[in-house]
Length: 121
Image 1 (tube, one colour):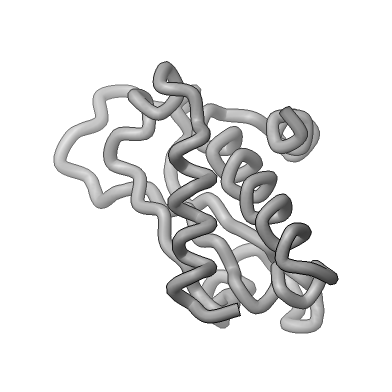
Image 2 (cartoon, one colour):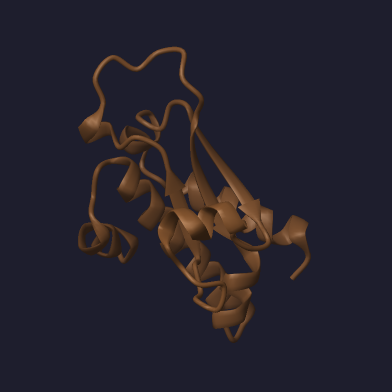
């Protein structure tokens, strides 16, 4: 899939986030990368051959105090990983949507189990 089309899917997934949650995504950048960087993999203690669909990097809302003058949190969606596990364009769309929701759930303080539940809603 062309990068522009993939980025459009990510934007559409963000547009589907309910307004009450979207309003709390202040100072959060959502970006698309082809694959995780070496630094990201090292931080997570993951091997390159493992498939990482998305990543939330930041301080969850549940662990914040005063939060000013700080770099934005970042949600990264990994294009190549999603394309690797999806069989069709429709599957890519669904996985992008689920991954965006999953990573946003981490921003709200969910652990892996909670984030996985949020992704399926």
